[in-house]
Amino acid sequence: MKEKDARVDFDAHKMTLFVEKDDGSYGTIQTGSYLAKNYLDDFRVKMKHFKKTALKQLTNNEISPIAYYLITREMAAADVAVRIGISASQVKKHMTPRHFGTMKLSIAKKYAEVFGIPVANLFQIATDDEKADLIQQKNTKNPFVITLESKEG
Image (cartoon, rainbow, N blue to C red; front, side, top):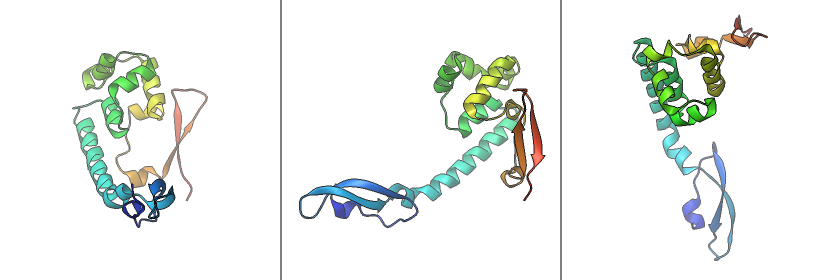
């Protein structure tokens, strides 16, 4: 890539590229990210809408919390299956409300670890992101129990 083609004026997201300079030599330049400058805001708007749609499906009993977290964490069923140690078809079953209720608690704990959430969050969802920031979850010695506390601000 030529140096003049690589230059992007976007200070919020800098990156280093290896380019061909005007004098024919090769070297690095620091520039802004073309993708971040032109597409990041659009991506954020679409992801917010995508998550709202997933929440609506979850609360309407169309998908299970497993499907919700797969969608919002942008993970594939096969990837999660490998991490948990079950088959991809089992994960796909757990994505339905009917089969979610038959899942063993030990498997739910593994899902929670993969999603980076407490087990309790498989059974409760914060619907207001701003108010959710005012509540803090703290782990206890019991891996299946958390405490909810107000954050002091």
